[in-house]
Length: 227
Image (tube, rainbow, N blue to C red; front, side):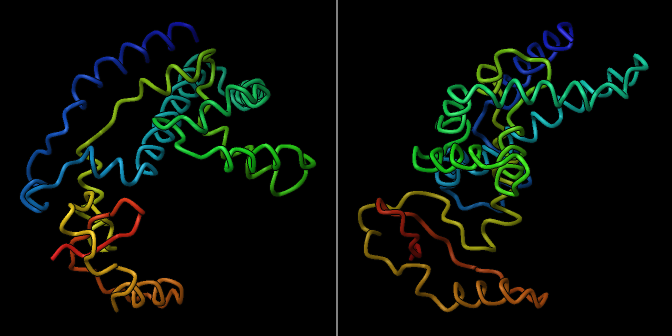
């Protein structure tokens, strides 16, 4: 396990160098707005960073399991992971630091209070089980200092740009901050396309009309149409 941890740390360092650039290679660059910046877009939608981190943890743990299988110890993984998760989830100070860290969980102190409340529920309750499962997604099996490794997870800016290209644009996600002269532009939520998308998604009728507009986000968090 220690050797695997060392290997993964080396891998992280190597990928950081490869993925650290904010430039977007073709073919996405040609389809993006001229002033699109993956770092700025990510700052507006931190949930994309959270997803990358959780995917990285899942891949790491899958490798731990694969190594145990190769060593003919695959049946031990579930027990090892449960014990590791139990130890990880027992350290609420560390969990809070991870959950509220702007580069990891990105949540508020009020949201963290809700997590703590769920942990105080009976361990058979749905709220407890759901919250436990959600927080365990940050746990590297066999790693003592999860917080440090979480901070070292590389940012895949190309994947961020791709998300805007294949999903964010069609769903009206703001891709940059509003400029001073755009502060009074039309709010997206007042446009017909916003109501149309929301209603059809809620109805789950299988139809979808993409949003063809471009949007910015003002200082109060309102997404506005870029004229």
